[in-house]
Length: 97
Image (cartoon, rainbow, N blue to C red; front, side, top):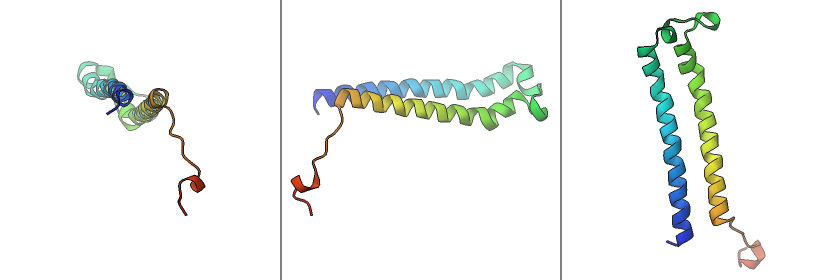
């Protein structure tokens, strides 16, 4: 494996591990808050929903989407900067019909 591909792999792996740690902390925070903070599960927001329910029903999905978009954008950017873009030859130069 060429050195630039190996360096790119290690960088993208580091980015993935960092995003996984953020994901794990946020997901683990919901039950921890439920067990430790009374208003988290007993409080009332819009329509009588508790902050815990709102976070589980809506907030986590917004967070998952934002985290996935950030991870994909950062990983694609790292790969493009480190490996460059792959240039394709026109069809007539490749001897393809």
